[in-house]
Length: 201
Image (cartoon, rainbow, N blue to C red; front, side, top):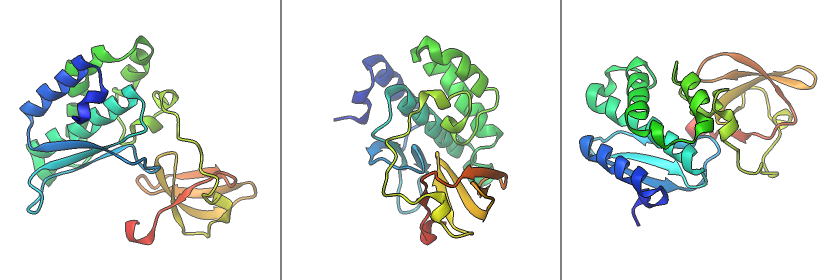
Protein backbone atom coordinates (compact mmCIF):
# COMPACT_ATOMS: atom_id res chain seq x y z
CA UNK A 1 0.00 0.00 0.00
CA UNK A 2 1.28 3.46 -0.89
CA UNK A 3 1.63 5.79 2.11
CA UNK A 4 -0.60 8.33 0.29
CA UNK A 5 -3.58 5.95 0.18
CA UNK A 6 -4.71 7.25 3.56
CA UNK A 7 -5.57 10.62 1.99
CA UNK A 8 -8.45 11.42 -0.39
CA UNK A 9 -7.59 10.63 -4.01
CA UNK A 10 -7.18 14.26 -5.09
CA UNK A 11 -4.80 14.96 -2.19
CA UNK A 12 -2.74 11.86 -2.97
CA UNK A 13 -2.55 12.91 -6.62
CA UNK A 14 -1.28 16.37 -5.67
CA UNK A 15 1.34 14.86 -3.34
CA UNK A 16 2.51 12.57 -6.17
CA UNK A 17 2.80 15.58 -8.47
CA UNK A 18 5.00 17.41 -5.94
CA UNK A 19 7.15 14.32 -5.32
CA UNK A 20 7.87 14.05 -9.06
CA UNK A 21 8.99 17.70 -9.18
CA UNK A 22 11.33 17.24 -6.22
CA UNK A 23 12.46 13.58 -6.36
CA UNK A 24 14.74 11.36 -4.30
CA UNK A 25 12.60 11.35 -1.16
CA UNK A 26 10.64 8.59 0.55
CA UNK A 27 7.78 9.08 3.04
CA UNK A 28 6.50 6.47 5.49
CA UNK A 29 4.28 6.15 8.55
CA UNK A 30 6.01 5.21 11.81
CA UNK A 31 5.02 4.48 15.41
CA UNK A 32 3.72 7.28 17.55
CA UNK A 33 6.38 9.57 19.03
CA UNK A 34 5.65 11.98 21.87
CA UNK A 35 8.51 14.33 21.04
CA UNK A 36 7.65 14.99 17.38
CA UNK A 37 4.93 14.48 14.79
CA UNK A 38 7.24 14.01 11.82
CA UNK A 39 10.79 14.54 10.68
CA UNK A 40 13.02 14.93 7.65
CA UNK A 41 16.41 13.33 7.07
CA UNK A 42 18.34 14.45 3.96
CA UNK A 43 20.17 12.01 1.74
CA UNK A 44 23.83 11.25 2.45
CA UNK A 45 26.66 9.08 1.18
CA UNK A 46 25.09 5.98 2.75
CA UNK A 47 21.43 6.75 1.95
CA UNK A 48 20.77 8.09 -1.58
CA UNK A 49 17.17 9.09 -0.81
CA UNK A 50 15.92 11.59 1.74
CA UNK A 51 13.43 10.27 4.30
CA UNK A 52 10.26 11.79 5.77
CA UNK A 53 8.45 10.04 8.61
CA UNK A 54 4.96 10.81 9.95
CA UNK A 55 3.36 9.54 13.14
CA UNK A 56 0.65 7.06 12.20
CA UNK A 57 -1.79 8.31 14.89
CA UNK A 58 -2.22 11.76 13.32
CA UNK A 59 -5.56 13.03 12.08
CA UNK A 60 -5.86 13.54 8.32
CA UNK A 61 -5.28 17.29 8.09
CA UNK A 62 -2.70 17.32 10.87
CA UNK A 63 -0.75 14.65 8.98
CA UNK A 64 -1.04 16.58 5.72
CA UNK A 65 0.25 19.81 7.24
CA UNK A 66 3.11 17.95 8.95
CA UNK A 67 4.04 16.39 5.59
CA UNK A 68 4.01 19.82 3.90
CA UNK A 69 6.24 21.12 6.72
CA UNK A 70 8.71 18.26 6.23
CA UNK A 71 8.63 18.35 2.43
CA UNK A 72 9.48 22.05 2.58
CA UNK A 73 12.68 20.92 4.32
CA UNK A 74 13.38 18.64 1.35
CA UNK A 75 12.92 21.47 -1.15
CA UNK A 76 15.11 23.76 0.94
CA UNK A 77 17.79 21.07 1.19
CA UNK A 78 17.80 20.54 -2.59
CA UNK A 79 18.12 24.30 -3.12
CA UNK A 80 20.61 25.21 -0.39
CA UNK A 81 22.04 22.11 1.33
CA UNK A 82 23.54 22.94 4.72
CA UNK A 83 24.13 26.60 3.89
CA UNK A 84 20.89 27.84 5.51
CA UNK A 85 19.21 27.38 8.90
CA UNK A 86 16.75 24.43 9.12
CA UNK A 87 13.81 26.73 9.95
CA UNK A 88 15.17 29.92 8.43
CA UNK A 89 13.57 32.28 5.92
CA UNK A 90 14.20 29.92 3.00
CA UNK A 91 12.30 27.09 4.67
CA UNK A 92 9.49 29.46 5.75
CA UNK A 93 9.12 30.68 2.17
CA UNK A 94 9.02 27.15 0.75
CA UNK A 95 6.59 25.95 3.43
CA UNK A 96 4.19 28.82 2.81
CA UNK A 97 4.48 28.58 -0.98
CA UNK A 98 3.94 24.81 -1.02
CA UNK A 99 0.85 25.12 1.17
CA UNK A 100 -0.76 28.12 -0.55
CA UNK A 101 -0.11 27.06 -4.14
CA UNK A 102 -0.99 23.39 -3.87
CA UNK A 103 -2.81 22.35 -0.68
CA UNK A 104 -4.72 25.26 0.83
CA UNK A 105 -7.98 24.36 -0.93
CA UNK A 106 -8.05 20.90 0.66
CA UNK A 107 -8.32 22.16 4.25
CA UNK A 108 -11.71 22.68 5.97
CA UNK A 109 -13.12 26.17 6.42
CA UNK A 110 -12.42 26.21 10.17
CA UNK A 111 -8.70 25.97 9.44
CA UNK A 112 -8.66 29.02 7.16
CA UNK A 113 -8.13 31.90 9.63
CA UNK A 114 -5.78 29.98 11.99
CA UNK A 115 -3.61 28.97 9.03
CA UNK A 116 -3.48 32.54 7.75
CA UNK A 117 -2.23 33.68 11.16
CA UNK A 118 0.26 30.85 11.39
CA UNK A 119 1.78 31.42 7.95
CA UNK A 120 2.56 35.04 8.72
CA UNK A 121 5.63 33.60 10.45
CA UNK A 122 5.71 29.77 10.49
CA UNK A 123 7.32 28.18 13.54
CA UNK A 124 9.46 25.05 13.77
CA UNK A 125 6.94 23.24 15.98
CA UNK A 126 3.80 23.75 13.92
CA UNK A 127 1.14 22.53 16.35
CA UNK A 128 2.59 24.24 19.41
CA UNK A 129 1.61 27.49 17.67
CA UNK A 130 -1.39 29.14 19.41
CA UNK A 131 -3.14 29.45 16.04
CA UNK A 132 -3.10 25.70 15.33
CA UNK A 133 -2.95 24.06 18.76
CA UNK A 134 -6.73 23.57 18.76
CA UNK A 135 -6.52 21.12 15.85
CA UNK A 136 -4.04 18.74 17.45
CA UNK A 137 -5.10 16.48 20.30
CA UNK A 138 -2.30 14.79 22.17
CA UNK A 139 -2.55 11.01 22.48
CA UNK A 140 -3.81 9.85 25.87
CA UNK A 141 -1.35 10.81 28.56
CA UNK A 142 0.76 7.85 29.63
CA UNK A 143 0.34 7.31 33.39
CA UNK A 144 3.70 5.50 33.45
CA UNK A 145 5.58 8.68 32.57
CA UNK A 146 7.16 10.64 35.44
CA UNK A 147 5.83 13.98 36.59
CA UNK A 148 8.06 17.02 36.22
CA UNK A 149 8.37 17.39 40.00
CA UNK A 150 9.94 13.91 40.17
CA UNK A 151 12.84 14.89 37.90
CA UNK A 152 16.19 16.19 39.08
CA UNK A 153 17.37 19.68 38.15
CA UNK A 154 19.25 19.57 34.85
CA UNK A 155 17.15 16.74 33.40
CA UNK A 156 16.08 17.28 29.79
CA UNK A 157 12.57 16.27 28.76
CA UNK A 158 9.83 16.74 26.18
CA UNK A 159 6.44 18.27 26.96
CA UNK A 160 3.75 19.09 24.38
CA UNK A 161 6.13 18.48 21.47
CA UNK A 162 8.79 20.85 22.84
CA UNK A 163 12.10 20.08 24.53
CA UNK A 164 13.10 21.56 27.90
CA UNK A 165 15.63 21.34 30.71
CA UNK A 166 14.49 21.46 34.33
CA UNK A 167 16.18 24.32 36.22
CA UNK A 168 14.68 24.54 39.72
CA UNK A 169 11.53 24.13 41.80
CA UNK A 170 9.46 27.22 42.52
CA UNK A 171 6.65 25.86 44.85
CA UNK A 172 3.90 24.44 42.61
CA UNK A 173 5.71 25.24 39.38
CA UNK A 174 9.09 24.22 38.01
CA UNK A 175 11.30 26.74 36.21
CA UNK A 176 12.42 25.24 32.90
CA UNK A 177 14.44 26.34 29.88
CA UNK A 178 13.31 25.52 26.35
CA UNK A 179 16.29 23.93 24.59
CA UNK A 180 15.65 25.39 21.12
CA UNK A 181 15.15 29.01 22.18
CA UNK A 182 16.73 29.39 25.64
CA UNK A 183 13.47 30.94 26.90
CA UNK A 184 12.39 30.29 30.49
CA UNK A 185 8.97 28.84 31.32
CA UNK A 186 7.13 27.87 34.49
CA UNK A 187 5.52 24.44 34.10
CA UNK A 188 3.25 22.78 36.65
CA UNK A 189 5.18 20.10 38.50
CA UNK A 190 2.27 17.66 38.20
CA UNK A 191 2.55 17.50 34.40
CA UNK A 192 3.77 14.20 33.00
CA UNK A 193 6.80 14.48 30.75
CA UNK A 194 9.09 12.22 28.75
CA UNK A 195 12.77 12.21 29.71
CA UNK A 196 15.19 12.68 26.81
CA UNK A 197 17.78 9.87 27.01
CA UNK A 198 21.36 11.06 27.42
CA UNK A 199 22.37 9.68 24.01
CA UNK A 200 19.68 11.82 22.34
CA UNK A 201 20.28 15.04 24.27
